[in-house]
Image 1 (cartoon, helix red, strand yellow):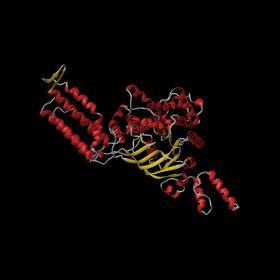
Image 2: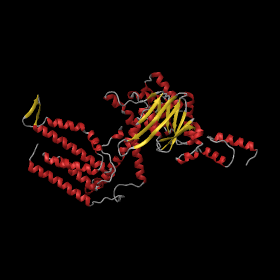
Image 3: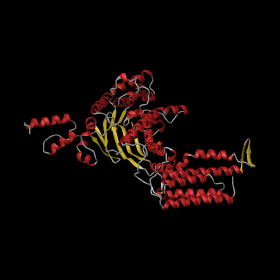
Image 4: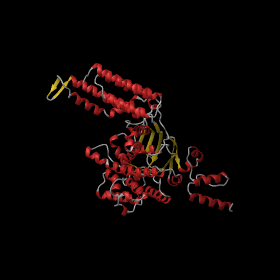
Length: 289
Length: 270
């Protein structure tokens, strides 16, 4: 499998040459395959947001390269916009970017910049709205009349409508209620399954990441701490604890059980998995406690 | 990027100029700026230029930030010096159509250039070494006598400090929104003036919306802490004049004296 996106020794320094100089990302190298669902975790200020902003050329790395399908995205700086249509980026609290008179127009901003027109544009808008679960009768109201959750959906739809090959979401569920989080997350998963494109999800919620990600990038103090399969990452609970991260609660419970001598599998990530593991354990032992 | 603006930024430090009482500093810089424009010959100008250099050295801020602040106004400097060049009186040494250059014009151009440079450098020195809160505090204290004529000194100072407080926040916000719109393929770097102005709409609308939101939030937060204007408020940090402030006043008095002496005894260049 050839890599879709490759990072080579990527570094970024804010305010280079001023007293406020700050290293945000240093020497990150990794590669992501087509169709993967990647989670990105890390403590606040570990460089996650800066890292993802370099992936679609919003900020130019001070050192290193971002290689998209074999080509350095900064090879032709004038055509960096084309990269942004291929690598879609949803920022934290994206609802603050809404500006048009109607939701429909706002979602159409991205794809029309890309060059879509007429029927094609309408289709893209409606499909994106459907993916994010935005009711079609809301499309013609003002984005400022929507509720918080609806605004969030509209803003995410605005990026999905460009139909990017890689979709990056920076904490898409932050500030939503538990129900809203749940629904939005499953919509992202469905979108990923249906379109078969690559998704990078930055999140503080280990539970969310554990449920959806194939592989996880762990950032710590501007460096790449680990990049591995989800199960393997969460099996390293102690190390994660040392850098201020936690494994999902259910994983911790199962690890604790293992520590007490019960024969349950390592790296359980969801409640359902844990349930069946405990059931089979009980069956095997033939008793309750 | 928007973040790169260094004009008017505060650089924390512990130099002599940083430690001056902000009131003293403000008065001194105002006096200095006035005196820059009261120089009538090169000797007087030389005195002010030398003192500007002294300020810069004493501030202990890397010289390249001063150069950066000059870069912002280079166009104004060029424009005014060219205008002055052609407005001299006396015998022309070069003439074409209605344009003529005289010695008088050349002197004017040189002097105005040096004056503007000194002005920008010294005011940058003030803002580089004084935090916005110190500055508004100083203004409030200096204007407090005006309260006698019912001038809303505290309210104005509060407005100023709120405005200054939100400059970096709004800049950051602008940056974020620009990034978000660029991520949706907004093109802000190419096209003619009209196209570029139109390209600002996706940035300005969310920026205004969020500015209003922030204004509501801060008003609520202030009310929650029972803010009700300036009367009877005490300060967390009180400022005191010290010996170094007196010395600074003496120094600026010497500069003013020096400039006056030069003006009187050495005659007018322009």
